[in-house]
Image (cartoon, rainbow, N blue to C red; front, top):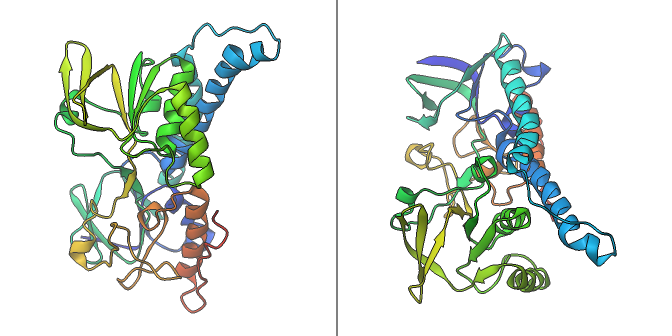
Length: 339
């Protein structure tokens, strides 16, 4: 077992903790995916770049003619749109990884982590430990237990923005902010989008007026199936066939986007098994200094907080960075300004 001074699990906002004040520490950075985290690689940055392209398509197809401007929309070059986005993002992630690997006091472990003791962590074939640990391992898409879904294949927000071609028919499971944003994008770019929503409204967790406005707009714009669930999924030739509840209708599509919420990754780290306090939703419990129930271990970001915003995680990373170096004058996290 190798002992470090500091272990950081997650190279999203967790990566920003390391500063000059830590130059004398032996640091382990554990990351199973791309450096930069959810926002930069599979979340707000690529999705907003994608939204911009979709808005241009909408301007050409609808807004221009409404304003008396002779514009037309002749379809989207999906490959060009996708490559424009990730040809910019991927080098940033790679540069962040290369920079960390180039530091003499940082060891980068590129594998999944799981705790095997309160402060002992298995990463691939290695077991590492440290006096101080930061858990910033994020969250993932929740996948409902639909029979056959794994076999037919599906996308989440992690994968849908990198597909090889624009799906002709796309089923979107969910009615939250991820579902509405990405479903709208693919619809504007030319996909036939069907929303399958278990409740009676879009964005039901938002303000009532916002939810009502989105619900009415999406009813007019898309095929929306409210109070509907998916009983099973199967393939029939090139089609994915979804059996819908309650009426048993079969919906044929080319791709499925699952956007039914997100869950924290604490279970994958096996935190509860080793004494970490967790709440009923699976989030790591922390105090106002972002300390967990295990001495010397801090946690931040989506693994601790259902308000999964990059700016929140960055603020928490600054708090943790200070508290790691200043145990006698710790500062508190402040979430009062979150909308």
